[in-house]
Length: 502
Image (tube, rainbow, N blue to C red; front, side, top):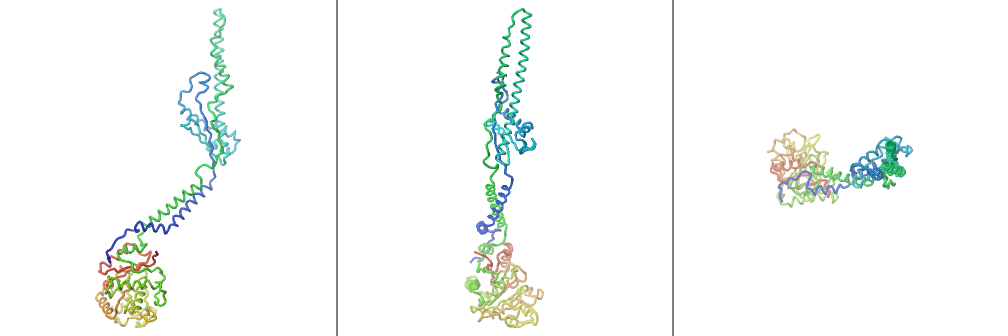
């Protein structure tokens, strides 16, 4: 089994992120429902408006061409359409439209101009009048009234042109007739007014045009009742909002997972530390107390039996007498794992000694469990006292029941005595040698492996097992722990994963 370290990118691989997204699919769905619902509610709660369209047709100079036989407008038809569109949105037209609408729903022409939009359609040559209303009927009335107002104003203007042209021609005719008669009298000839016949015909044509009143602008198609509100339907906005919200929720999860340096799967844990997971403990509450084995269910006991079996039968642990059980961070999990592993070994007939080396964690003998020698007050004499030569190893060993037939030998941390034992590498080595002489297996419950207090004990162990709690230290801390073990020459045999599901 290879223990070569394999670094894993932060956040794990793409498949891990995909699995995380699938497990948390409710988050994108919730975001989609919130965003889509908010968009639908906002749009649906707004006052609805309806658009009605009127189409106008423009004829450039019909009177000039058809009646007066004069050249028509020399401007291109597109320019004429553009100018006509601009005339429709003038104040005068709005004023007439408001009159036609009888001030409903507008109080002034300026209010009407805000509800009307006019655009020339260059493809069809028509002018499109778009009017907004709070109801379909209102929009239709505004559009048709606007078109009618402009057509009436334009018709009156064209009629005025015809009347002005007729009166001008009548003046010309009267002047010419008077001139012809004067010239005839002077010449003594008969009066001949045939020369003014053309003017007479033009006057007659204008009189006919006044009666016919040919329109330059006509309504090609009046407004119809709109079938629905203007704009995009609220339900479509709701669906779009749901899609956008779900995408944003998924993107946030993906970004968070990519940036998350914590470990979220056993495979990722194995790749980061370069060692196998020997056992998985799903019930975190199991590690809060150190109970005798006969009080546990078989399901709760199985991870520790599996851990002991793998350690005893693996090639890497063959012949090992001293193992260190350490956590990556100070969460107390390694203390309980050490106890249950020691109890399992004792129940299997192994003479096992558990050395508790972390002064900051409770000991199995702090409350007087087991039997042995104390120091007369507070925590019983323990490891510190042996390293300081105040007690022998045999004097500080407590016997704590593993089950109803077996016991585990335990040495508590003892009373903290500064850092005296940290510099006593030789004393630690002697202590371990004494423990090995009287026991088949020595388990060292060490502080976090990156803690200075753990170094002298980790160095004397023949192998190490790391305990990692889900959601704990990130990958950088795990790599530091891995590198610390490598620096002292202690092989990492495996990992106990706590709180991982699936």
